[in-house]
Every structure is written in structure tokens, then in C-alpha cells.
Amino acid sequence: MALQKFNLPDPGEGLTEADLVTWRVAVGDEVKVNDMVVEVETAKSLVELPIPFAGRVVELLAAEGDTVDVGAPIIVVDTGGEASPAAAPSAGSAAAEEPDEASGPNLVGYGAKAGSTRRRARRGEPAQASLPTEQPVAYSPAPPPEALPEPAPAPAAPVTGERARALAKPPVRKMAKDLGVDLASLTPSGPGGVVTREDVQAAASGASTSTSSGRGLEARASHLDQQAASDRPAERRVPIKGVRKVTAQAMVDSAFTAPHVTEFVTVDVTATMDLVDRLKKDRAFRDVKVTPLLVVAKALCLAIRRNPDVNASWDEAAQEIVYRRDVNLGIAAATPRGLVVPNIKGADSMPMRELADAMAQLVATAREGRTPPADFAGGTVTITNVGVFGVDTGTPILNPGEAAILAFGAVRRMPWVVERDGVESIEPRWVTQLALSFDHRMVDGELGSKVLADVAALLHDPGQALVWA
Image 1 (cartoon, one colour):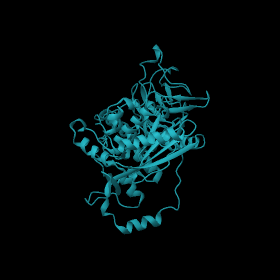
Image 2 (image 1 turned 90 degrees about the vertical axis):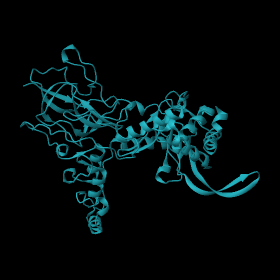
Image 3 (image 1 turned 180 degrees about the vertical axis):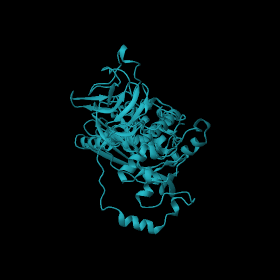
Image 4 (image 1 turned 120 degrees about the horizontal axis):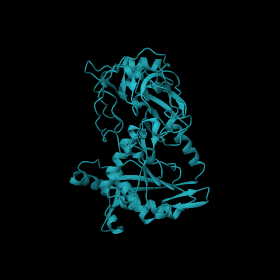
């Protein structure tokens, strides 16, 4: 017997720790080189890690939900031969480094590929279809995997058995953990026996999640809700880690480093809403979701083209302002793991159809939690769509390293003064509010006002873009 320990590597993000989400193997399973054995949650994304050697799993050294330091051992494998020091990465080293000739096959790269929204199929599991991009949070669950082989008797760490007893997406597992819900106790309502977010939420509220009667969640009895309210604890504590921990620190650093200024404008966007309706019927946009946010994104890119100095960052170490040529447009996305801001590289050079595809892919991948680290780096300006929550406006905090962020509010039907041929009348129009926050070290009031006014002008009259081109 030759025992090899697999240490948690840094999956290419320069991190010091990760949360262990799901084991893909159990004690007694046989693994091959590059088999995906564990899924971890870093501060930015969900990452599946392959193992660099083959053998039989002897021990799992960490439980699902544990926070593990990079370089710490997480699994022990009996390779059946003599131990090879080169086969397992040393503590603190990245396992993605290329092994030498004697250490066996090269280890494949960690993490999800850029532009992909699919994970690798588990052993014995049919290939999983691409996740839909239309749904805001929920997504189509994968088919249930075939039964895993019975593990051979071996000493094991106290690893939870939810993986074998209940099928659920990692964000659903995290929600269940945060709410104190036992996934194994739920009756899944999703296709293929998958536990859904609604199942967990219903269980947390004390309601029955069984759908066998066909009544669904709408049939929950009011007395159960009252009972759940009385049984609910007076407070709930959730550890601050992962995305929320990094986001919190970044927002504190930004708020107390960059002097924020926020300006507002209210705009008649009736012409923009007409444009959205036309694009939805256009054959060129047939296979993509067209929303007002797409027009706002294009308008911001055009406004930056007219006012390029807003596309900048502050280099504190060099005491320089760095002006960027390309617009790497960040889109703030609310996900089950928290708020993330991946960005579209070179958004200003994209035609509207290409930009629509990029935005749909960006948001779908972010909500699945599989955005590659490269998509979080290098952002130059950000849009946050607070209107999707019915909010009119806000004072957004800058994404660290950027000079400006635009908040897009709810689009509402409102009375508006319209002037035609010198005659004013009040008409119902589509109206929204925009708010632009900027770093006053780099962007003065004139520049910030010009950018905001240009975005507003384009949303009021999208045809103005032809004049600027």
C-alpha cells in the first residue's frame, strides 16, 4: 500500500483558502488521473479540482462545508505502488504545475473554461445539457447520477452524506446550510429528483415541500406558516466568507479610498422601449434576450467613446492615472453566492448583437457560479441594474480600480411634459432614472456630467448614435 495525499491547490486566483462544497467521490472509490474529485468555492467562483494520481480513496480529510487552507491535504489515495513525492503537490504549491516525466500524465487545467456554462459529467453520468440563460436564478438540474459503488470499509473523516442522499445544485446546498435545512429530509420537486431552491425555502418556513399530491407550494396551509413563525429562532448567524467576504472588504476599501460623487438624471426613454420592442421582432436578435439594459450598455460605451478620460484607474503606487483604451464593461449580477461583477472585454468594439450575446453568457455563467477568474479582472467601468428590483435609483459604490459606475433604475409609465411645435402637453411616457458615481480624483464634475448627459441623450433618442458614429 502506497498512500498519497492530495493537497488543496490554488486554482489560479492567488487565494489562501477555499470552502469545500461537494465531494465527487467517497471512501473506497477508484479514481483515475484527472478525475474531478471535489468542488470548492473560492472567493470568486465554483471550481472542480482533478486529482493528479490514480488509486483507491482511503480517507477524506475535510467535510463538505469546511474552509480549507491552500496547501492543506484534503484526500488520501492508495496508489497501489510506492509513493512518489512528485505526484502530490507540496503544501502551498499549485497542483496545476506541470509534473516531470516520472510523475505520470500531465494534470489538466483547473476550473471552468471561459465561456462555458457546463461542468464535466461525473463518472457514470450522461453529458449535461447547457444551462438556460433566460431564468434569473433557477436553472435546469442535471439528470440523476447512477448509484456510486459501495465504499470499502476504511477509516473516514466525518464527511456529510448529503451527496449520496440528496441531489441539489451547489447554490441550493449553500442555501440549505445557511438556513439550517437538512437536504436529506426533503422531498425533491425538481426533475430527476433534484432538490430546488423552492423546496429549501419552503422547508425553512416550516411548510411541506411534498408535491406528490399535485398541489405544489401554493397549497401550504396557513397554520403551518403560523407554526413556523413561532418556531423560527430570534436571530440567524451566517459566517462571512467567500464572495460576501471579498465583496464587503472591496466595498469598504472603495468607499473610504475613492472620493465618491454621484449625479442623477431623469429621462424619457419611450424611444428606447420602442427600440427594444423592434429588436425583439428582428430576425438578427431572434435567439437572444433583448432588454433595456442592452441599450443602456451600448449607450454607455458610446458615451465613453466621446469622453474617453472616464475610462481610467488610479495607480496609487506609481501616483499615476491610467487611461484605458478598451472598455471592459462590468455587469453587476446578483447570484446565490452574492453580488459579483464579471466584465465583458472590449465591449465598446462590439456590435449590439455581439454585445447581447456576451451579456447573456456573462450573466448565465455568473449565476451558475462558474465565471473564470479572468472575467473578474481588468474591469474599467460598471453598470448595476437596480431597476430589476423595482428600485428607482441609488448611489452605487465604485468597483475597486474603476473610475465610474452607472446605476440604471426601474422603467415606469409616468406623466411627462412633451413639447411639439412649441405646444406643451402632458402624456404618459416611459421614464427612468440614471445615477453615475465617479472617483473625483480622476473625474471632475464636468466630465462626469458629460458622460451622464450623453447616456441620457442616447436613451431619449437612440438615433443620436448615428450622428456620433
